[in-house]
Image (cartoon, rainbow, N blue to C red; front, side, top):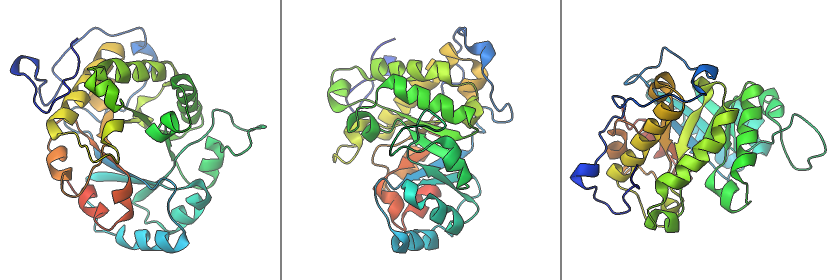
Length: 288
């Protein structure tokens, strides 16, 4: 398979269809060991928008976010906000019931001598059911390797959590036409530890488009999402490829969200700084 194009344009002979659902490829040995929600098929994946607050917020600012998160929010969009772990309970207690709450990280063990860490069980005990794992800042600021992220994902799923694993390439990898190589390797590392795909939302976040002023065009984002869906079809099975939501996380804003939302393989967004502002509601409602 050829590399993802690094420029804005895609040559006609290389262009990926808006949906990759009609591309059939052989299944792998993992096909018989995974589960998926059969009620969510191609064209029926519910739009998903996650807000990642990162290391931001206090009770006063959370109160402000709660106020604008009362919406109205589209009933056709599943919404989750990821807050610092010290505010998980406060956020869950105050956020509207139609908004899920996620931790931004967890460890791969239920308990033990792991100072500063938090387990999936602790997150659940606070009333939260989601966790973001493998975010680019965890990978590149805290040097978390693929294998550790995979083990975290596996333990979170075993603990009954819903997981947003993040993947994505850096600028030098993009410019070196290594996007497929990088994101497929990250997916391959995750694969052995994912036993229930119905509780997984994959977030593709090109590191080069996060807080750099550089942005991926809707066509560039769609191209990678379609390739990822093809990868799922080849390495897992058709049902998982059709049902798994793949969301985009590269400087999504109120000004570009509607164009991105029109793309067939972009099933939503993982939003950073924009999720702290009232315009986040426009992003949530991008697909109506």
